[in-house]
Image 1 (cartoon, helix red, strand yellow):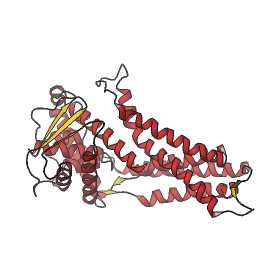
Image 2 (cartoon, one colour):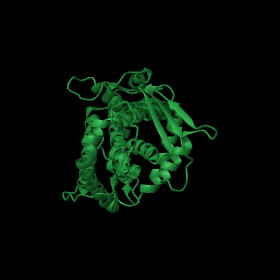
Image 3 (tube, rainbow, N blue to C red):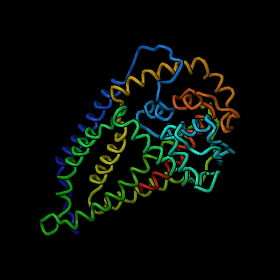
Image 4 (cartoon, rainbow, N blue to C red):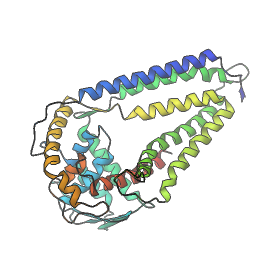
Length: 358
């Protein structure tokens, strides 16, 4: 494989200008979608919207993210008596008390049947073993997707594909000038170059997913953060490993092309990864449900927030989970035990999903 001299500076300028347009495009689309979901009228509501489970409420409240929805589904199962949640520091033990039935929301049903093996009624997981938890999460996520899409949430993938197309347009002319064999573009050379882009890009995508929960854990050690400091474990090194893999992949890409081209490709991957799920937004029906959830959250905040945060200690499962405990977790009303449960589940799930992507 022969690499030509670096491309003209004008091509790099045009590529970065194109990438800047993509960034402005994403920001504009996300801003419009966020403005559409705002509601200024608050009328206290004493019951959650009908047919809206805690997991669906969390999925809407988090604008398409599934981790809090999964935690809300587990808390709902525990509140209904199907599941017992136990915690001892960073080790969790779930016990199945009842078999799933038609009374459960679909995502709760799927989570329960995938969390335990057919012959088992107990499941323990920690920072080193959480495969079963991830299987339950995937099943719950798929069930939720079929429930809320496209009636309540739109993925707006068409906007993302436009951004991807513009991003590709930005780098293709540069790639064409950098990869040459006997004055012609060699498909073998392009494929070889693509391998390193894929390696570095996949590790970068995975690292973008796992760094937020790790940074959130690190922030618990800031003196003015009132959360309890969360202990570190071997899995906390995973973001560093993925970042090193991304660096290595782009380092080889730099050796095959140029530093400027490698940085540009990394920027393209990072930009499109960050905005992939930020483009999801509620539909008209979803915005109506969100308004009702906002009003219901007002009731929970006024009636139960202070008491729940006072009675529920982080790291200790409450003896009794109340009727609306799962909604308190889903809508970010409870900031003690439930919030720590969400953080732990997010950490384990993101690590497993990032490893699967890699």
